[in-house]
Length: 235
Image (cartoon, rainbow, N blue to C red; front, side, top):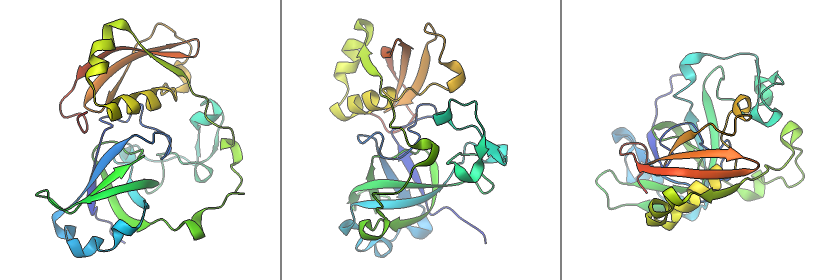
């Protein structure tokens, strides 16, 4: 089987660092699914507006070349315990494919590359290739009593604060961009091996901005916000 991407996601996440590890964890996140010319047909999405959510089958394009391993160290276990790759959602997989459940917020039929799907709650970095789209069916796919294995605990959220040096730039951002930054940074984007240095400054490309932040004592402090053109959908 030969797989060719049918579309590319243009996302508010300009780089893989700080992208939510699961869909829906950052409800305010947004993106645009732009079909490639061969699949850019209004007929191909006829009726899709009746569904609130979609499954996207996509490619881990930034890590696929690194290959795979039978075991991985998931962040939810602190990065120091190995489990089988097929018991995880690791990006390092034999075929480099991912599955994401996103919210369909609308269909743009007016842009030059229409139809474009407007997405919310996504966990995909800007430039992600999409191989297929399927509607989500809650009567068949929602299982309230499903077990969650090692990922059973709810994610602990940090308090996000904005330093005075970044307050003016933060206030100028659109409300949705501010929500994205709060939701993403509250989940502690740091690798498990880099959580012990309270003085380290990290950076994430969010909503067209380079956001610099520090984490100490359960508080994430945004230190600065600088425009970064070409790093994802602008705020």
